[in-house]
Image (cartoon, rainbow, N blue to C red; front, side):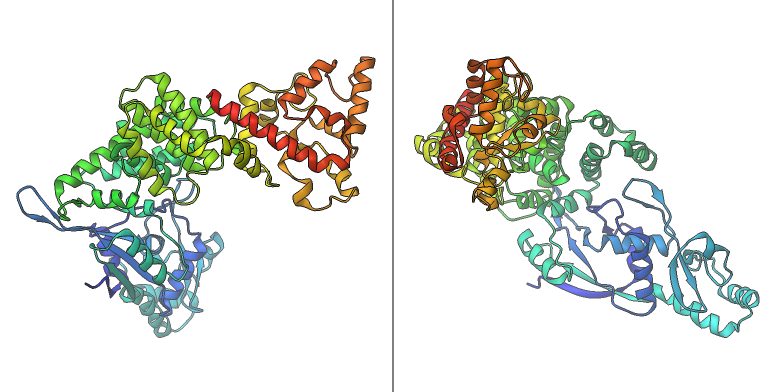
Length: 597
């Protein structure tokens, strides 16, 4: 079986196919992201007969309808959208929507004398040598003879030369662009491989891209509504100020109930969980279909029966309905905000504390699945809290998560009480050896963004711990105000005493959240030296360095920050011993935190 065929088609034919809806543009990359100069360069290349790359289409499978007839699949444009959009803008004169969701015209100007193209500007518009907007040349009513005569008279130039140039410009319509038609029988993995090999830029389309192609190409079962719901929800979460532009440019969708269900997001200021369209698809699909592989979604949206390998219309219809329901669950204000409340309840109060979007995605999947099953809300909250932290502790969703998502969602669905599955996973992954050895070892790192240091901070936040040597200011307050992490053994002190390797003095076991003013007063002294000053001032009732006033409060502060009680005696000779002690204390704190969830 041929995996693809290559044909050459004229620019005019391609634009005709788009106009007649023979090729569906999925708007994966929407809005139009090319700048005007790239549009100019594309037209210049076509004018001079240079290659402009291939357009890649993937035909939707032909599906069998209930009456036994066959519905012919539509071609989906999976690569070349920007070039096609550029052509419709420059040649057909159509408006495009820019990255701010504003409708704009991209005008390309042309000088028939010099045969140069430029992006339109007012100066060119006043210069008689320039055609301000070449789309006027391509209009059906364009009179070539009259134009050449007028242009030659105004610019005092021979008409035959200009006529040749205008005919060359018009010939852009008949210039060829290669079209690669991928077989509908190909799976996503093969399509991806072909795409990478053909595409000179080496751009990798994700499985979510292909899924969006399938969604966008189906109007019969509401694919456009699903795609726009996902697209606008994600965009408005990041750029709420664009809502007026979206309402102006897409009034048809914005007058539907689907838009009313997402516009609340413009008032949501938390940036802990900012989903992309890939995240929305993954959560909606896995929560509704109990599958983790997006390639399965593409097959189901195409109508594929996994048993008979036929393509059936009823499967397509059912799959679009279930996906629509899953997307609606995702964008539901109550679901989204209650899930965020659970996320915050474990101490994730800032996006810097959670680097894995996959962890947040599966957490939301679990929340939606349990809610739809009617599980008690207290069990839902406890299950989601524990699962979020368990997956961080074990790095469960690092790398490609699909197979693990697939495994986990199927196992959760097998248990009436989700806590039973979680307990089984704890026994296998969070043994005494994990808490006493593995976690301690993982805390032996200089990476400040380490998930294990973040877990330690989450534990501090959940317990309401104060910052180092702070009587009133909490770690939570400092993180929310973008406070700084400081060194318990000051960096300069260690460097002066032989520990001048970044990976040693920047150990996370040497990190602590402390008020900047306290850190400034500590300077580059040893713990023994600066703590002796703190102890002396406490005896004298002074608060020059910190606001802690008695030894009991100091020891409590040490315990909250996992600092050994003998820290007040430590000098550089004790640094490595201190790191080992503190890692053990931090691991114990994380263990107690997890078990309290």
